[in-house]
Amino acid sequence: MTRAAVDPFRSLELRTDIGVLYDDARCTVGDGFVAVENLNNRLHFGGNMLVFPGPPQHGDLERWLALWDEAFGDRFDHRTFEWDTVGGEEGASPEFVDAGFALHRTSILTASPRAVRLRAKDTSHVEVVEVDLAAAGEEVAALGLASDPEMAAREGVERYREYQRKQLARRQRAIEAGKGFWLGARAGDGTLTGALGLFDVGGGIARYQHVDTHPDWRRQGICSRLLYEAARLGAERLGVDMLVIAADREYHALDVYRKVGFVERELSAGLLRVPAPPAAS
Image 1: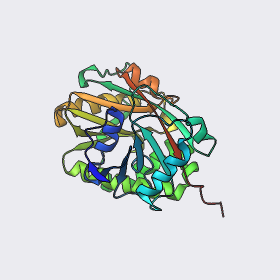
Image 2: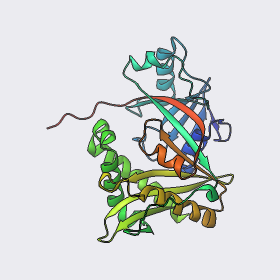
Image 3: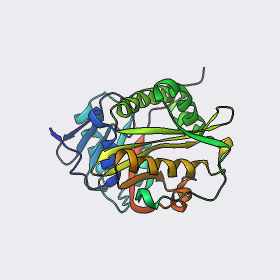
Image 4: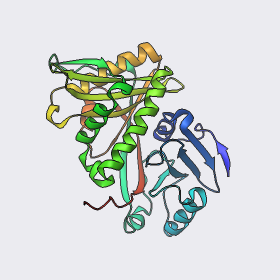
């Protein structure tokens, strides 16, 4: 296999997913696929994957699993398969679902910084501030856990926390290198009610990361306020002219993204099989 750059990917989602990994990303071209690795986080399901030119066809299950073993050996205990299309094609995914994979369907939305609107809801009860991930990493990780308990339950809480710690350390390195920032919305008592990151991936494009609002603070305009403030800061500090955000097509915040000015640009699909979570003691 030979090394590859991110540029050949057609999908904006793939280009930005891998782009935010910066030097932690390694892309290697195989026979009909690209192997993507997050070199500093083996727990990252979406950063350690095989990418194919198109969706699976009938009979591809065993072949794709064999290609995974060829590319990665036993380095990972999950299996992630993506394909470089933009129309949401699913192909023979049901054959993989029958073998224990989950099919995820994602909307990729874009906006210019100027197009992101501040909604009319009063958010004066929170203050939007930059977050130092080195100092507040555990707080940000706890917010992520509260915002997506299903993911933590699926992966196991301790595994999820370790994954988050590694991700936050990588993001803090990127922030220190001037490639992005993390914003949080704090209540009067200091509670972190919501947070997100925005990172420059080159070519005038920035990608939002982990847009989280605590369940107790939802429907108060906090998410849209954070999106708006990040858009303004992204234009000013990073000099980007396209913002990218991705969300599961069933995700509750997708409608918020549309309302603040994001427009769907691509649809994607992929397959993931996770290891069984540890049994409760």
